[in-house]
Length: 472
Image (cartoon, rainbow, N blue to C red; front, side):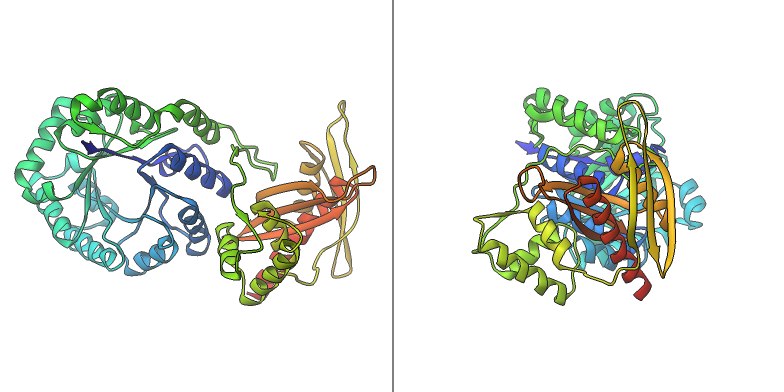
């Protein structure tokens, strides 16, 4: 029985539909949910900022167990190199070469004629093949292309090494019967198409994207681009259900775990569609993942630093040594160490820097009949700086007050609070992870007051950012 791959383009679709930008943490969570669901291909957004986007690609690649991780490249050799350097840690990496093939889009988007566009496409595919055999050529606006050129460029892409060819009905104007005829002509005029995987991307302009995708599967397509949340292409959930119910009759199957489908799709939609506050440093998101990354005293330095890298940290050799020494001290007293505890070790042992900002004092007002306010005073270079901010809760207000003093917003990747000691005067520990310019900075704070430990953790991470970016 043939397998039909379901490829999810939720991240790119979410951006195209103007729904706003998913946070770093939410993108990681979305990829985790898709991987757990049995999605064949998880598509990431194009790399725009090498330093920032490399961290996301590396993090998704390192944490994806079963899915292909696909990232598009542009026509520059440097783009191929940069994307591959970030993606190569994936278990199943794929490079995508998207290009318009209709006359209108080639000239409007790239100011290129057909022969020049064909040369760019084949050269880029050959560059990708230097790194991986899994290269996908995506023919954008294929249904409006000149037929002779379409057949020629797809044949050339296959000869250059593309293992998957995806044709897109970008305008979404084809009815199922028309799409059937379109695919018939492709197979009739491109003999080598039967030797690669044919993929389709059907826009939903006429509300028949799912129907067109089913027609494509029946004609031999073995990969379908879908979206699990917002987007104007075939629905992930609908296609998974259709293939589950009718797959036997069509002689096909897909790898999606339909038992979990409804619950996970609901999580994904909540993750993508929940309105994000424009003021709070906290991000909404779904995270019911169990902490399954466990290390023990039997793990060597290489295994520990590999786990640190999976958490998103890029440590120097010196900091790696400090983390390993701290890990050894704790592992001698415990049977196992979780990823959250490893986070705390990195926050306390690595990237220690002189304090640019010092917390002088804070006053927090909070109650069930009043809004939360934070009055924070900090000192930098001998100058006292303060701000008063209203927030959604005491910790939120405190973080906003710090941001106002600093004059910069940092994405809050993680926030953890735990008890270090017991009793009425128990000491609480907070670990925060801030993202700046594509790098994660951990901060750790300890206090008998949870709010106090949270503020100290944020300032600790902030000082690492300020110090490193001043040195750059």
